[in-house]
Length: 300
Image (cartoon, rainbow, N blue to C red; front, top):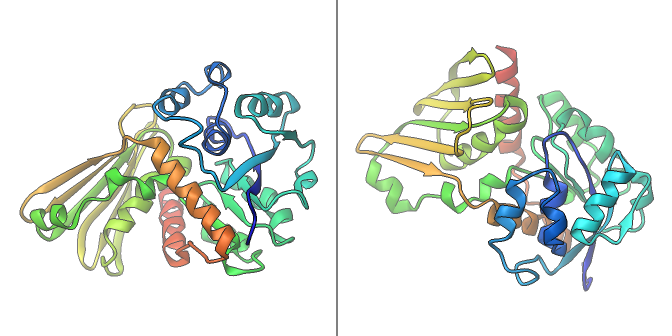
């Protein structure tokens, strides 16, 4: 695609998810005073560490926004310099080159993505794509071409969750790996599941699994042919830094997530590149395994 600047539409907001603010700011820049009142105190704190407009993604702009509320849409629009407020998601069709579906209420992803996918418009669907394999495949089957859907947790691209070969070599053969994060299973487990699967590509088939639950905390325990223990824990109201602990025969590593901005920017950049060259950046096999684990965490 030879365009001077890719035009994006953004769809929001789901409860507790400030991505329409943060993602739009990464493309457009933002009004610092208005961002202080966005309702997500962490967002202005990590944005203020960057240099705008230098740190924006230059190849695209968010030019249209739709949310469930005109007032809310106008608030995000004014904060993030979005030129147009749409009163229906369908209004964006024919006006944008791509859609940012910046809602993490997975149960609504199909209905929001369908109109765009059926018209060949690429869509970045916020994590998780779906909460079960049936719904995930239903959404994927809407694609008109392979690269049309992009979805991930941005933590997949966090440098903090990418230890060097030497780091991994120093701890020897990995015996166990455990990810921890605050908040609820359905929306946040993927933040540790996907980065961990990136780290352990050769675990073999799943042998057994179990779940531990107490109050609003949940842990899914998995055992594989070549890995004794893989655990994913969401800790509800307990505030913790997203963390991956890796235990090897000769030592261990503790990886802590810190840089939200660069993780988001990297993921958004990958989506823009997939629009430009129409090459898929989606590992569908891995995606479906992630959804399988999310589903297991709800079934047990």
